[in-house]
Length: 348
Image (tube, rainbow, N blue to C red):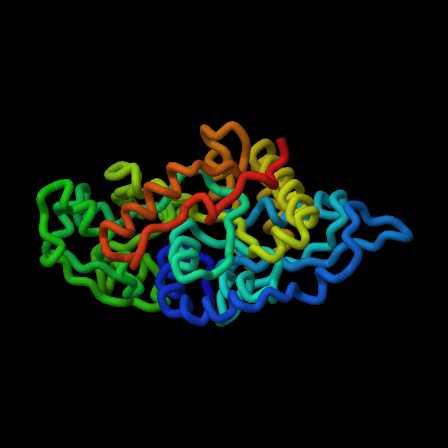
């Protein structure tokens, strides 16, 4: 997949969760940890205490949402915690399914997909917010004049076909007294944003940190309508780091070690965005280096933002978004939000 398409990953994974959630529920019944976690549980690798081998599976192709993980691996922060961490891509099954089934110990996920999973009894838990506030929104070329949600009327939206997409668009349009029924919604599959808005659609849902920054680099001016400008309930955590309940119960020291090293990696990216970008570029040379550098500069201050520490999550954020999903009939029942996430493994 071309990295420029990664801007749409949040809602695509939400769509995927709607397909996989029943399979995930079946996986949730498997409480056997993967073989890698059956090794000794040491916190430091020494001559007589080997490093604990674990995997963290990405949500999509590598991008600056993942920089802290690459920094933690390549700067030795995971090894300092006694871990030998392999960063892998999800393939067809998806990160959530791999984490829930135990085929990977950790993964990059989203509040929206974890919410759907928890409702279906899937034992996946968020252990850290990668970015403190939702940086996604609806983007369109400046020339199309879509600078407010009511101007979605009569326009074509290109998405993935998930119910949450129409619900979010409707929510924003209601604030302006507009009718979502007047929006033409089509699926654009893997089409690139910049190609699609010239050929098939008027607007799409993107992460500004990747696709928005790429638009800047290309000199293509866009209107960006951030979800958070229209509803506090849509200021959810996307993405997050996740594990499963079995790891939390049986291997809490591994979860703590992983989270501590990841926190150090993301803090490094906050403090040293230029060098952190070079770490990602070296690790993934197929990425557009100019885009990685510009994206990292834009995103690094937003990892922690106004939180007291990187990764910290609020119960109110989980409750607000789950409440919004329930109100829009995207959940069959209310979420036990306090079980969907934990701050317990974050370093003080």
